[in-house]
Length: 443
Ligand code: SF4
Image (cartoon, rainbow, N blue to C red; front, side, top):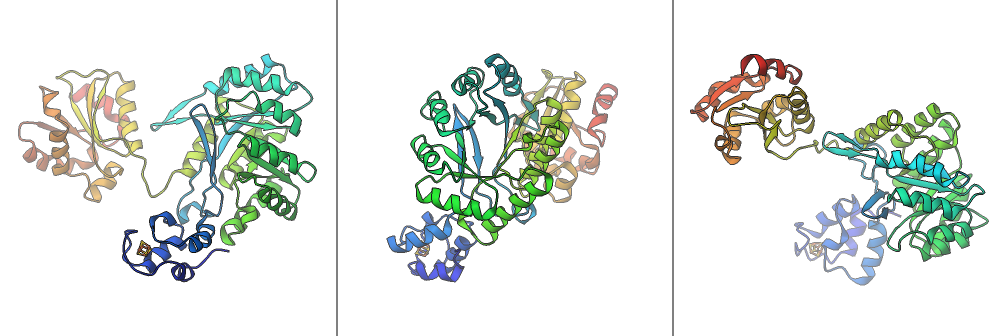
């Protein structure tokens, strides 16, 4: 059970020594109860209190990561049911499934393009997370080897314990894969295998009661990084199973369901329905999503949807302030100014770059806000722009000294002329899409 702030306070030393950077033990206890700080910040907790508090402070959804060769897929660690309450932390991994009944050549033909798929999306790389190899009467070891020949991404292996043991032997020692599924018949053997290979273990059950029974037994047997694999598949069944599990984990701190969830939209035969089920799984609590079909036009919207839901709404996506070169600018090229909100930066940079026009792009520090928002908040003004012109030594890069303000902030031009008396201050268009025409005509 979760402890209240007062219950936690009673277990703390109550000396108010401030070593945790909080003014009182009570203030620290309140933050700990809200799961906003780590218990390790207090160095004075007794061993007995530590045992009780560690249990209370443990994240309600167990965090861990699948990993291999520098790739990592984090899961768990969520603390809210709805993103607007705080944020979601662990983007669900999108995995493509192959079967060992397919030939090695077929497997490689499926895995290779998915592994190579990469899209630069406002400074982030969107890509597939890994692959699932499922036993289906063929050579399981051969299938694992075929995938490993063309991809180094994390793997999920599904089959009987004997097949899994042989498949796991193909993987490098430091890899952390997932194996599945543990059920009422095989859970002891699967738990042993998961412990032996430090693998996450997917647990399959038809009902919540059965799931609770299984995760309890498996945790007691020593396998800790579990993944809930409910057997429900349609829109209603999958949504209900995921929501009940996550709600009980977060609202009641119910440990037997406090694990990431894996979903199998690929189990439906129709690719269009598969994508819709995957979208539902991204929104409603899946940590791992298994697809049977891959194409750029279906994976792209899923990856963008995932970013939209898992980007922290309190932290704007930012680019580093500085001077960016577009199309090899010369000392004669103009200096365009914008803010460090990623979407603003990429809108301007993409328009100028695709028009083939050389320019210097000065990205100012505006706490990740767009031009108008930053201007309204007092984070994008003449003084700040002039300061960044000097900080990034923009004057040393150009001889023409023409600086172009975004059209929405034309009102700053007078003040900027005062701040930068040896510069020619110009006012550009309001929209990024109009910048190339403006540059051709006015610069
Ligand atoms: S470090 Fe521990 S004992 Fe000191 S104020 Fe913080 S919670 Fe209290």
